[in-house]
Length: 329
Ligand code: SF4
Image 1 (cartoon, rainbow, N blue to C red):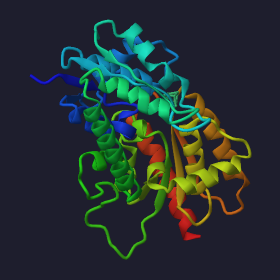
Image 2: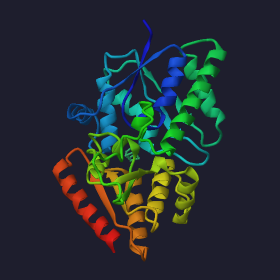
Image 3: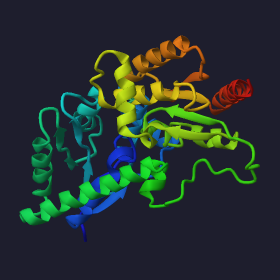
Image 4: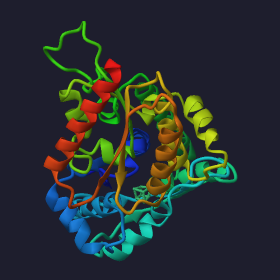
């Protein structure tokens, strides 16, 4: 029987799963992804984590626990940096330590350390060391690295073509979002720029299906992953100070872009309670929105394990009313 690698359907899964799957499958392993987030997944994560952890980290623990007994090893990479002189949120840097401490039933953890802050060789070396866990043949490892890189580039290309990570991962080349049946095509649909971590807005439980709800209300949605990296980078530089958290900088750049009059009709930030980077992004975006003469409607929704779906629905309806009124002006 092939060795099975467990992949929690949370956090970096939404950025890197195609690459991880290509890597492990190329080395003859099978990937087993945990199921979708449910209340019981969240509850089991909450039981083992500290109160101060953000909702996505609690959910991650729940997904790791759901893989207990389902795989031989769980893949929990330690992501320090994915580009020079910039870093990932400290909670992602400490993920393997938290999981080891909090999920005592999980025995095998594969935890390569991805740190490209000084050069990209460190990443290649670390991935090579991970490949050595499965084969002694360097050519096989290099081939697996190459396949992972190709899979990642293809994934990013599909995102920039307008697919959601879910559609792109499932190789469904038709965007499922933004399709509203029976809509009058002569009516221009409001476009809403949604600023939020992919592991929140594309997780239907954590993000409470906000994208689907907006689509049902007749809006088209655009997210950070669908923008060109150069656009996001250029916009983020408006902040005046280098934001050295990679994901925070990208979210900020996307938010600044959406708040530029003429790009979208409304900008919605979906933020996680207890998320440090989100709290400063929210502040910067509110300031930018207040500064703008032709204001793009802007709203922030904060989600945590206590957020009720009915409240979200009401707030979205109110937001869409404001967007439609602003479009009619
Ligand atoms: S960036 Fe925010 S939401 Fe994401 S892991 Fe860090 S604290 Fe949690």
